[in-house]
Length: 185
Image (cartoon, rainbow, N blue to C red; front, top):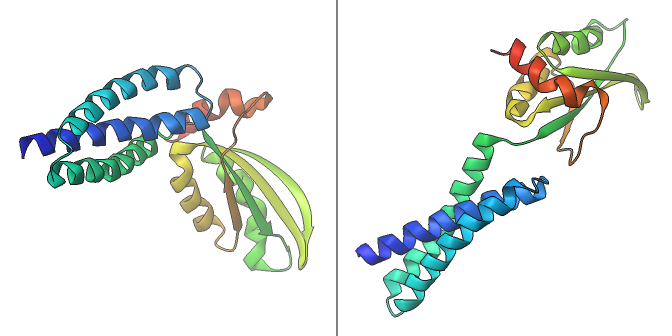
């Protein structure tokens, strides 16, 4: 039984690191990902060697397989806690000064700026009239909170969230973390 637990723990650890490293690669962390990969492979070789030496036991095979599933879950949890990178919210709201329900949407950008977010506003025209399209960059750690704040400030907003792969220039990439953390202490 102790051997099965060892196999489970090693495979769960290996797959957790593997999942996290894969996310680092996808997000373009070209220096951190290879360092993590060294630890990942060290654990992999140990786990695989032990598992293959004792493959004759169904309990060991089950421990290896369950460790795999648990490892993926743990890797995702770790990456979500660290929340590397940024998210870009594209928020589309109706504006109609004659309609009090939509009039507050014109203040949405300023309210979000006061909460520490960078907001760029564009005017657009939709099927039912004038719209504002807000582009909001935020640290990924803030994505759930920002979603709640937008829906609270403008419940009728259409919100689309994307993860930018690269950022360059503008004040966003230089100041968004500082501004967000200063306002949201």
